[in-house]
Image (cartoon, rainbow, N blue to C red; front, top):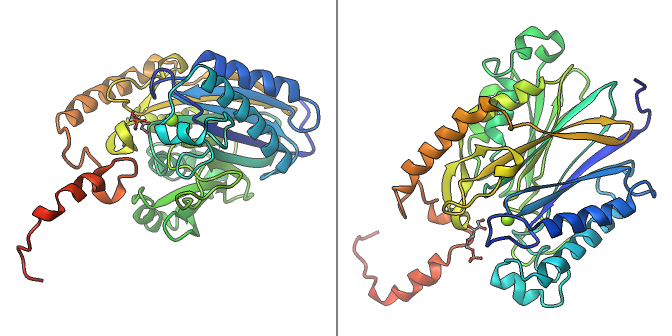
Length: 381
Ligand code: F6R
Ligand code: MG
């Protein structure tokens, strides 16, 4: 099988253009609209191939192209596609938050609030020379926040109890370099495992502030993981790819010098706790599901995860294979449901409910304001 000489870029953009029903799922017409737009553009200089995915009420446009990261022409195609999807969503009056609808009565994605602040589209991308065989997995989550990939990424690239290759494949034993973004200060640090493992854990365990954005192999400094995350946009800030607080996507290149497909999936046998769920205000388990079960309905959750596997061949996607359509993940789903029951019984109490400092959607401060006349000093400071 010949290797493709030129570098190519895999870009995955997720957006919420309107939910069906409420925030639970996506309407097939939205997906068809995206497919039609991208089909018409394929092979005409902007993209070499595409695939449209969905998880919950979010869609993802997976694009292969040779324009490099942050390409203006790719961005133009993406916005045109999202505009068409948003128009279709508006025609069906699919669900968007009132703020989005008020801003979007003309219908385009930007005007409809898809570009606005915390709810903007999210971009994950990586540039690489196609290997002789190039297996990749696009993970897409819904109702979970940024930082959700920190735990699985540590296990995949730094924990031999998860990844046998770290102690069995000398090329992997050279370790991996993690790039970590501080979403509060907008600064970045790179840490290399195994040497920096403890420091890395002490930082990325704080998922509300630090986000692993990419991982490279130490041997060749070749990229193996890319996450959709950037500095958080200020409220009201707009731009071509405004940072989103949710809709996280993770792209992994697997096998050979990188963890095997099975090692990349193994961390998700634990439905670990993530921030998100109802009103982006609750902690709960991340449940790995096949494509058709990615419809978070109970208390708008619990958060869902899909894995779309592809072989990339000469700039084309071969796939997807539905990676969690496997009974070996049944126990993870069962455990996620048990955790869901347990967490839900806490109702409005922390730590099921997220700390007040992290609540982004809830109108809590407006409620508190109503009681301000009744607040008296009690402790001397
Ligand atoms: C979480 C999410 C939903 C909504 C909830 C209320 O990210 O999207 O849980 O927060 O359904 O939605 P609104 O305020 O639009 O009625
Ligand atoms: Mg959504």
